[in-house]
Length: 148
Image (cartoon, rainbow, N blue to C red; front, side):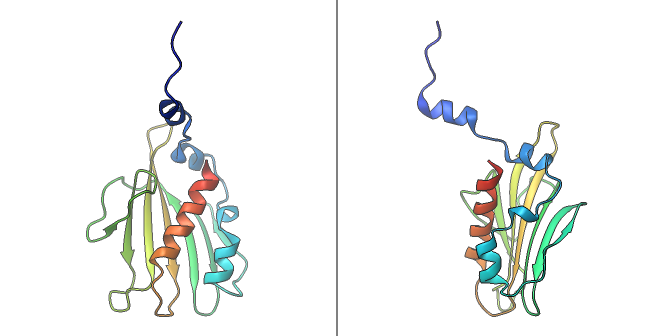
């Protein structure tokens, strides 16, 4: 009779595959965290969804929050900051090199059951001079929690 795996190994085996979960999605708008939509894009328009690639965008006259899932490469992004603790890897780019507030976060989710790499992209364009790095990371963490 085999001995039970140590608790740490059991939890690793049960960890869901983000990429496999994304491969089954047809609409990503329900993954947008409503509390962050209200905070980052007050008075936002109704979510606009796209199927190819899977995308959801909310915007008002000034700001936008967008999430996208695609099948892009699983390589580091040149010139981007590495962000630890998000799926396989994550990289943050600044959309405006002058104000450096608007953020574009790419989270590499790994390969799905068919061997295709899946990525999550979170764009926070506040156009308000505030640093949205932490906002992009929190939105990504919330989405990852819902993919489990």
